[in-house]
Length: 157
Image (cartoon, rainbow, N blue to C red):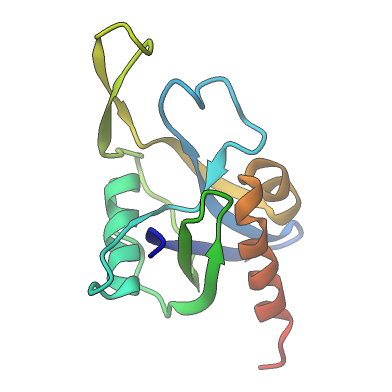
């Protein structure tokens, strides 16, 4: 059974820029000097018996340090990543403006083989980006999430 994750994709319409999405830069030494294809929707793993939307909201709060905004979240779909992980994504329109980003941390031996274990934030930054900017920043496996959002927004109300 594949590892499952759930995440939230917040979006807003900002004239004249248009569509913007809230995404997060992955933390830790591997991602430290990367920008292109180094950002992700806030997400995390959950068990098969846990409600995916509840898990997505919990993971958002853990990674951003602030609960997700109250909004009408809707399912965008499930997306298989190159690792085999499946991410279930929910989206909502919200003008989210946290005062700070305070992510939870993970332990990692760094440098590898050194025996030194350090703690790094799961995410080290998060911000709003235009749809075109997000296409260059998101990890490649999450570009279909952005496409699904665009399809949803293009549907007649």
